[in-house]
Length: 528
Image (cartoon, rainbow, N blue to C red):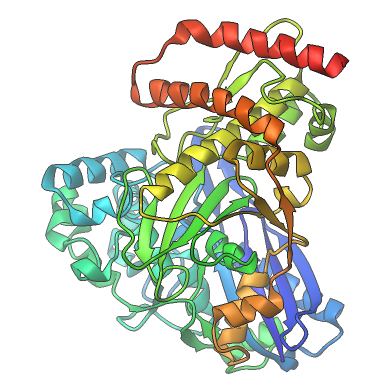
């Protein structure tokens, strides 16, 4: 049986076609689309629905051509998208403006207002999204749209996450109480939860701003998880995509959640989907409890019968690329130059807040800090410190996830960067003092194929599909000689992270001398 899956990222969509009987990838193709920035407002990041659909069409035709099959042979289709990418539509499901992409941070004031009132009133839903409502999330962006587009308010029918807009478009649906809504999307970004009856109370939202009066009714829909069928491909889009009308399409979800599944993530695992940013996905038991600073703990958001736990870093690959660009170099060259560095050997320590902190501080107003500079330091030194900083921030996140009651069994480094950066994988293993599992080939798109395969009955459950379709891992083991040194460096990093991020007391007088000692010791070690 052949199935197709799409993975919508920040700058492109990848369509993958697999044969479920063998697990072979028959074809895979990528189509790019523009990201709209505004030099007058650096918080803006927008994308067009039409550009997304054009990209999907091009990638689908290219993947079918590469596979050498007829599109009519494809038995099901599924797609994941970026999360916190929100579009406002009219009664005909036509966008009233571009998407607020996940990276659009214009709604920070709205998020602060939602958070302040939720804390004051003890809103239960806020606890389950870490105690802070993010400027990236749905209600904040919807309120920002309503405040800044008064001429369009009377045309607003509903707002959708990208994954739900995609399913509705492909199935030829219109806004209604039966519109498919992803538990993954609405649980993690819109404070939806079965435990408190769905969305947060309408009265609460109206107290945030009367512009939100009646909004929950407009957001109603048919909620489902990714193992359930949301609808069937309509004739119009079957014709455009070269597929067969009527094939099943499951409820969508976020790219990081399905990439984690494609990488083999199961209960007890923490999968870091490391790309331009990093999204951490863990699958915990049903009795998982909320913990401050974790972006969300949502039952059934990744797989049914378990709790999906999400956290993230606002810039990873973007930070590495920025360091390389300032040096007129590239990430691979700078990384290779530091391959023999011992732990902390650059003499630098990096707080990687260049695009704010998503987890565990949830502060968009922070900026990156590098400690320990001297006149001899290079861009390669900064790159190594940034990789170490990302790994140490990851440890803070993993330890906070453990506070949810998660017993961490495995660390999985998924996404594009681990496929081509073994130094990063080894540093993560050393800092975390755990094995790090890296898929032997890219799992991007495999998660969407897994859920497409479930939709057409090719497998009984997610675990069986993973056994056939997920790539086997390469394993990076912690090095005994590095673990102790990183333990010392992490203690300093943790003090600085919470000192600058929360204002906790920290002994700054020891930081620079310790980093200088690390630099001298590292230089001596590399001299032999």
